[in-house]
Length: 201
Image 1 (cartoon, rainbow, N blue to C red):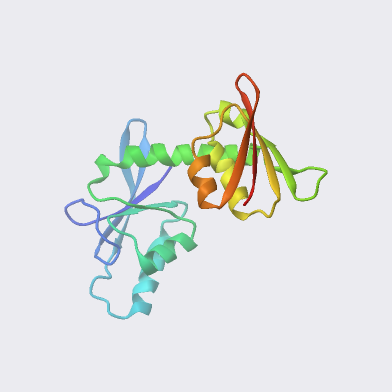
Image 2: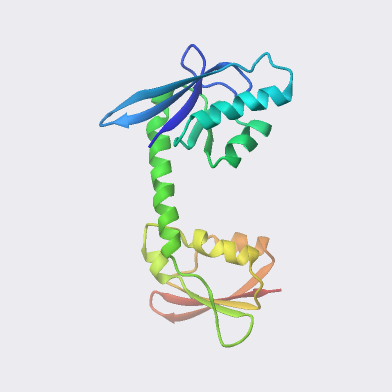
């Protein structure tokens, strides 16, 4: 996994509107090595169009590297990177202090993205507007959270009632249901199993 870091001459991360070098790092066994350096000098450019062109050229020169770290990534710089599929990190410091952390988090995110494709989704029942999902397999797994599976549905779907089978009521239900102006009823099915009915107020 390649990670790009924007640095000054002292080897510390800097903001995207400063001048420095973008180093691309890759882990080789137990050591991090630099496989490419891309200079970027835009600190004295007042023309926004020219500045953007230089930043875009830098981003595109990173090739298959899609992780970018700087001390601060805001506004047009964020838009440019985000539009090209980068995972963006704002971190202050030197690479040796954070590369391992970023690598671990990115790997976890990659596993979770794969897992969510295999996760169950609410299915509509015979009654129009009513849905059902069994969250127990998700709650027993450490690969993905119940919140990641269910919250997008609660936020975006049109439904009358959602019936959820759980091993226990997820702690995040309280805040998120209140925030979405949803009510719920909990029914104990058996030891280690509950049914939650979620509906609009």
